Image (tube, rainbow, N blue to C red):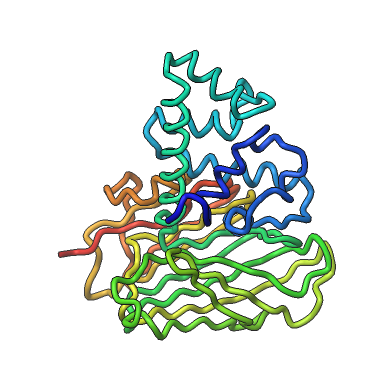
Length: 318
């Protein structure tokens, strides 16, 4: 990762001036941040600003307290630091904490680097109900099968067009495979509601970008359903959980995980409104679940909040 390129450079540019309070925020976002936040340069600020804030809040939530504060000040996420320039915010924080300005800037730089690492590492087997330009998700139902030859994922999204729409892009988080060639053979199908136009995985990133062509132009305010099937190759690792992480509020979500009946997990628990960065914590939580006779566990969620995870986590029997 070079400081002048990719997501780090975009974050450094974003914190300049008024931070996320700048006019025409969407037009100033780089391609990495636009993808991460699910916005386009042409989107209005009323839509862009809360989505960018939600993503930045998620990326800073797991940082050590001093770095989290430095990041929140740098991007003007908190009202008391919404000054006209980054220098004003930096000086104010340095004075309040009795840091030197040089130390404060170093903290901000380090926070940005850690945010990049969090963005690259925190896509934990995760389906984001990402509302791309022109659409939003109202519900997502998922089945994650661990009883098949290799893991299989089925997702059904109900989306609502916010303008005439003929293409959508969704993302799926996957950990990087140690052997890239061994992980070749990923299968992505649209069972109905769309055709897969392309599947992209940028080097150094742990998510798939799936571009879907719709069978017709969906008019604004009309609902449309899309079913996806993803079959993972034998060389592809998975995280020990599956979660829906909305970047916009989502009405409902259902997560079903199917374990092999003859090889039940050691423990299964629900993930209900878990901060995005805490999804990587593999410590068994409360809300334990027992698989049914078919090896299934299922959880239903309503009123999903942006930046939080909803799903199921597990530890396998060693």
